[in-house]
Image 1 (cartoon, rainbow, N blue to C red):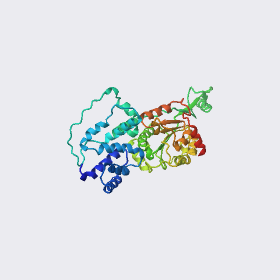
Image 2: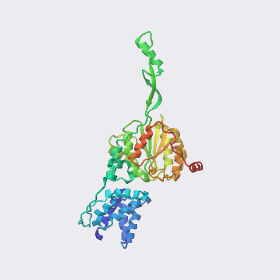
Image 3: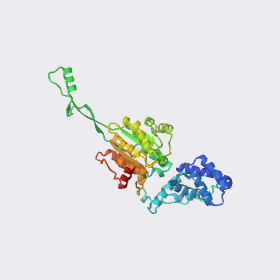
Image 4: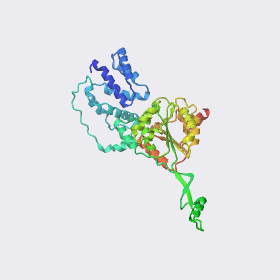
Length: 409
């Protein structure tokens, strides 16, 4: 690599990070080049930490940056052989090894061996790799269990096609309205008298009615904060499929404010629907004000959309910027206004998850079910949970310290 191509390669490195999920814009690339002019290139560590300080803004992005840096900035003629180290291989099943392999799959999709400015494309042929198929699974099964956060662009496109075919078979509930039914248990006196007058007979034909069953309304409240950005964009495809599959589905997005996108998702074309949503929402990937957003929903929308035993899906990681302010009262009113409240949290993908965050502790006592939502398989589990009428009303056991925090708030 020659110094004359440093700016081109820094820009290409930023593109790799952006495609892999780290938001690195042109402004950060310009700042990084200016910082390198000041810091110089005396050592590899100085170069590493200069780029890290400009390109990263969250702790969870560091592992992905570290892998990308060591693969990208090594000898470029060995890049093809370096990518072979990122292919799946049998090793320990520890949590750290699993996480490293998931991050590597995203980099493998973005680091292509095509020639870049200043690189010599001459290299030896890559080594042949023999794969044993006895321990592999089908692509569909692997895609069902893959985390949205670690999917490559190709896998995300395939996952969107599978999500478009998902349905939520919510059971019908009995309403107070009646419908004509010849075998109904209740006699409709008014219709019976009208039939006797029309026929002019001495006998009165009995008309019967039975209770009417109908799907309850569904209300979705989806978090679009920065910590949920990768998941919320996949959930939008899921919400579009639900909206176009059934009636009375109402969708709201919230970050620092609440936005009703129900009308936008009714477009049959998913691209047109998501474009309309993008133009309507102004707080993508920002902070999270869960309490204020739910309070606004209870004030402006609850009486309109939560009638007739509505089911509410709350999609959020529970990380609240306002430290739980107004969250307890908002969740309590939301729970009392609906038939069932289900909380979908991507953080439940971790086996060691504990309700440590204050927002999570304040929300847990008010939900009927606390379910994971990080891959296609978890969305299928949600469909089975909604379709089972024997599911208990309360499926979450709240720790004792949660109750103490709740009363203290």
